[in-house]
Length: 162
Length: 195
Image 1 (cartoon, rainbow over the protein chains, first blue to last red):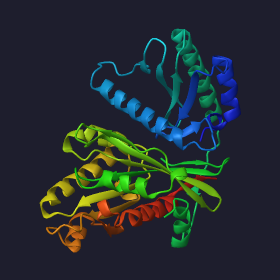
Image 2: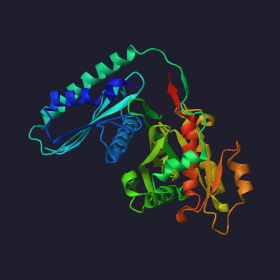
Image 3: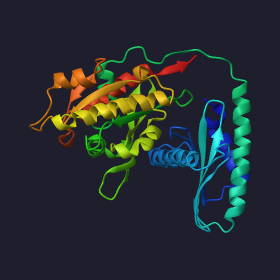
Image 4: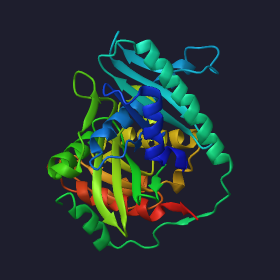
């Protein structure tokens, strides 16, 4: 996994750089399957929905575009916004997969400037991510858990009150 | 595709409930939502049509406990069962770590079960997955109804590779958590780490 995307402090610094920590702006990073990796919060379940929905609309829009455009090799963004509030999603390409950069903004006086900053952030992160990955050494994989007992699974679910 | 964060020792996995329309996929997730304690579940999302049929997907994030030092989170999805929504089903399958095939046990739904299962294998293959390598279990749902196919017949017609299977009455919760625990176990034992 790309370590840049998991480095919360680094992403925090980029957020400060591009958005001056504007409280009306929320930034999320989701993996291709919708798993949110930024921000890291102690109770991040509420952000899970954002990741699942953002990945869903992006994938659905991509499929729709394949059926609609003759040239499918275009760089797209997803926007759902009014004149001062909205959601924008940009792809974050790495060597392994396409992840998602999600911007949620509310009561912004200059959303055009904000979206431009968002694109700059995307470019910065995409370059860093690919650079970061291209130096990665080849690795082999092995099973994380060899044997899991029924008791361990029951213990896992006891957290849910089951 | 599962996501393992070794820095924070977290595991995220995606489980998809697949099967024919009105078979009980959403009912499974709704039951899990109702019966789990508040702090460890997220909000259930249902993208439905006006008449409560799944349009795109249902989604429920669950924070399980720790296993061998790893915090685990499961993302449960359902696909829309109606034949019309094939394109949506393909999208929901992306990144899947484990499948629960919810079959409708009623005699008149056998063809729909077979069609759905074949569609699932085809959709998996189209996206580069080897269907035989994806952890999977079967759930024979609606066992409380009078006109059900014998389990042995369902096993023979649908579960040709002998995957784990469970009888269920999802609306009453019978077999729901047994199925979820079983697929969770197989998915976790299938996780690979880079070393």
